[in-house]
Amino acid sequence: MSSSSLHTTLDRRSALRGLGLLGLTAAAGLFADPRAHAASDLVVVDQKDTGPWEKENCGPAAAVIAMVAAGRTVEHYVPGTAGAEPGGNARAVMEMRARCGISPWGEPEIKTVDCVGAYLGNLETGIREAEGTATRAQYREGLEAAARGSVVILHIHHGTLLGEDADYGHFVVAQGEDADGNILVSDPGRAQSIGITAYPPEHLLEARQGHAAIVS
Image 1 (cartoon, rainbow, N blue to C red):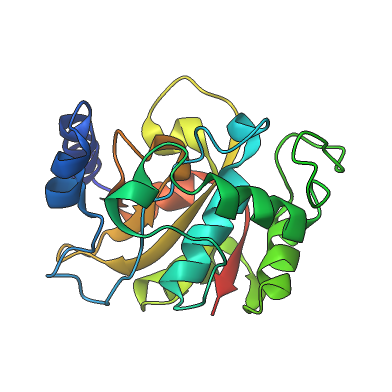
Image 2 (image 1 turned 90 degrees about the vertical axis):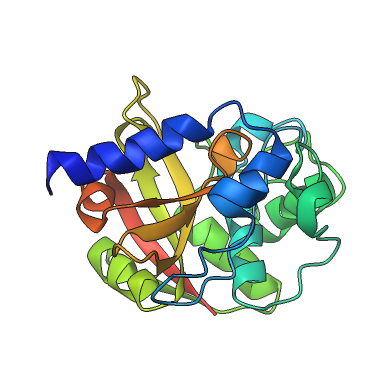
């Protein structure tokens, strides 16, 4: 990976910080770049204000994003700018927590897993419970599938992805490429500051934390 390509991506991301939601719609895109090599139906879902475990809700939020991008129906999903706001899809995310088995139905304040956040297997369970399909893949396979237009949940190291001093795993959703071959990513943990942005495949490889799940 050339440093210039990464810096271009990170500079673009930094330039989007502080933009309002309308700015994100136009610049980062609630819709994919029309020049994308592979069509993308990624949406923005913010994990903030999604219940008592909002800081750990990147997994169920990513599952909602992936289901919508794959053309599946997500009960109580709110589309558009209203749904992209903090808390705009709180009900959909909290219900996905229950489908994933990380909180009981109707008791979002209770956690039923012994980890921070969720395992990729929990997300696969939730997607299947919502009548979607989730197929486990090696991380590199997931990136290649995303570049071809598949919807893929990636387990990444968030600090490495963002170039920040943060040390924790995180789930994002990838689908499609921009005109420069960078992979489009929707990040529920940075929904308001970067929305959907694109990263060089090499940088996404550097940010690998675990495996991937291809959703359809």
